[in-house]
Structure formats: C-alpha cells, structure tokens
Figure 1 (cartoon, rainbow, N blue to C red):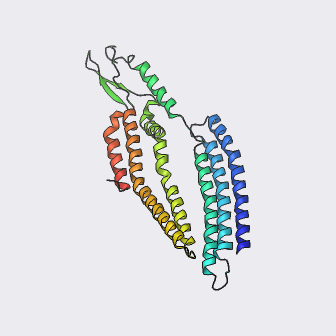
Figure 2 (cartoon, one colour):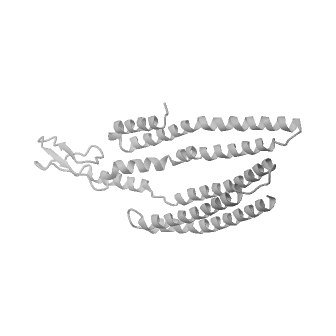
Figure 3 (cartoon, rainbow, N blue to C red):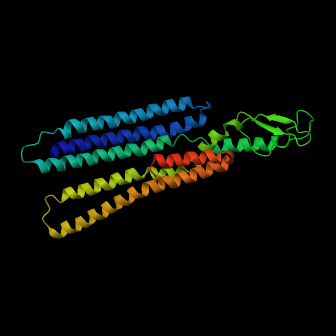
Length: 286
C-alpha cells in the first residue's frame, strides 16, 4: 500500500505541475485575446477559453481515473481494513488538493473575461446628455425636453401644441436594461464571490474533521483523544456556521445587485423587485 500511495502522490504532483504550467501560460494569452477581440460576442476568445478549460478537464479526468483504478479497487489483504481506509483517505485528500487547484485556476481563467460595462453605460449617459435638449416637435418645431433616459420607443407630448411625438432611442440606449444587469453584477461581484467560496470552505472543514476522526481509530492516549474531540467539535461548529451563513451571503449579494440595477434603470424597479423575490423563493430564502 505504501508503495502505491507514494506512486500515486508522485503522479498527482506531476499533474499539478502540468496544470500550473499550462494554466499560467494560458491566462495572460486569454487576457490579451479578450482585450484585442473586437467582435461584440468575443467568439474567438470564448472558443480559446473553452479549449483551455477542456485541457484542465482532461488532467482532472486522468487523475480520477487513476484513483479509481489504483486506489478504490486496490486489492488489500484480509484483516487490513483500517490500514486500507487510511490509505484510501490519504489518497483521496491528495486528489482533492489537485481538484482544489483546478477550481482555483478555473476561477482565474473565468476572470480573464472582463468587459467594462461602466464604459458602455457612460456612453449611454453621454449620448442622453447630448440629445435631451435637442429633440423638437414634429408639428410646431418647439423644443421637447427628453426628461429621462428612455430605452424603449416613447410618445412625448409637446408642451406648446400638444402633439404626441415619437421618440426612438438609439440602439445602445435600447440595451440599457440588459446592460444594467451586467453592470450591476459587475459592481457587486465581490459579494457573489464571497458566497461562492462557502462550499469550498465547507468541504475543507469536512475533510479536516474526517481526517481527524480517522486518526482516532487507533489512538490510545486519552488526553490526545480528548483534545482531538474538542477540535472536531470546533470544526463541526465552524462548518455549521458556514452552512447557515451561505443563504445570508447570497441574499446580501442579491439585494446589493438589485439595488444597483434599480439605480441604473429605475423605470423597471417594480419588475426588478418581482424578479428579486422569485429568486429568494427559488433559493428558499425568507
């Protein structure tokens, strides 16, 4: 078992090095490609990014296949159950470290796509500042003030003659509602990240507690057993606190994101709030 464990650890170490080398080289290339890609939908960038993520998946898949073949189905002698469980647990923890590294690099790779929605939003505001006092009545030619930022076709009455004038927003202004959500999410992504980190932290605590419980199987020293049981209780308490904190963090993110969205496009606030409440119900947050 020890020899197989050492070989497996060495194998995982080589995969880690391969993953790091590949991802570290790919990330700056993706950033450069994202900045240089003039296509509105960034098709070339997304194609390359998909290929990079696919290569990471191949590495992780290979590690899991070897674990399944060499560790899960390792032919251990009769009466060596506890030794096998410890052997399997150690190898599982080592595999988990590789998977955690993979998740960290995937996050970095996803973060290479940074479209600056603030710039797009500012262009809409600048355009509005130019046109708000230049619109004229189609009947009498009197100025018709565009009193707010419209993103749909709107009928505005002339104060002088009462004629209803059709105001047609620009193509970019019509994207305000869609852009508004993207911008709101961009402004609050740090809150979403805090929420998304919870499962990983919970998994780390679970593995730490599980490993400590396994270490007690053959422990005879009562003081050590007592100390470890206290540590296990603390770990389980921290795990429960994270579990309870998770929905609170998600609601905090949602509320902040929708507040930003409402500021960007206040005309849609009522619809936004309905959407917000549906999301709370979907996530069983009350």
